[in-house]
Length: 77
Image 1 (tube, helix red, strand yellow):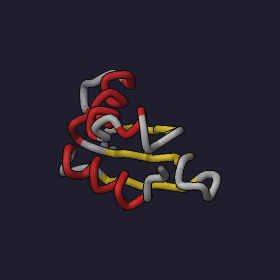
Image 2 (image 1 turned 90 degrees about the horizontal axis):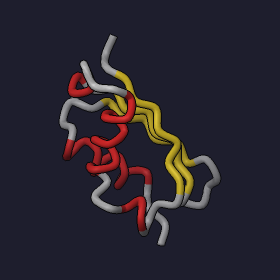
Image 3 (image 1 turned 60 degrees about the vertical axis):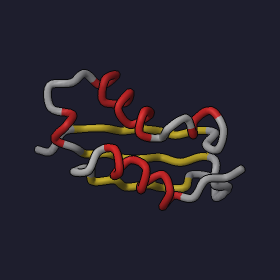
Image 4 (image 1 turned 90 degrees about the vertical axis):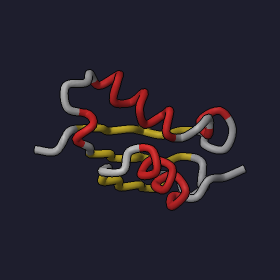
């Protein structure tokens, strides 16, 4: 089952309230997205820890509804 970009953004913002999220559908199929997430919660965290926070926010969707997510995370400048 495909996942809508708005749902991905909602899940991330629900878990990381200050997140600025940009989602792009890479293939037009609702299964392959790129996401850029900027949050102060990422300050002092490694890239792996940042990605873990985002994947946790997706509540298991990577295992079922979402096939691929190219993820770019950063703290605000």
